[in-house]
Image (tube, rainbow, N blue to C red):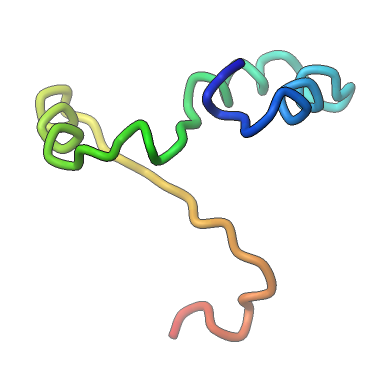
Length: 70
């Protein structure tokens, strides 16, 4: 089971959902990571600089319309 999923049920849900084409599942598996895989921030920044990469992240929110942009 990929470390992306919290449970086998979550992984199976994505794998069997008819509205999710396989290329989306493949992209998610390659490009989504749990934060615990990067607990050594110095090592992460060093590797990022070595590879010339950037780091992007997404903070999922719900019902935050009133506070966005403050």
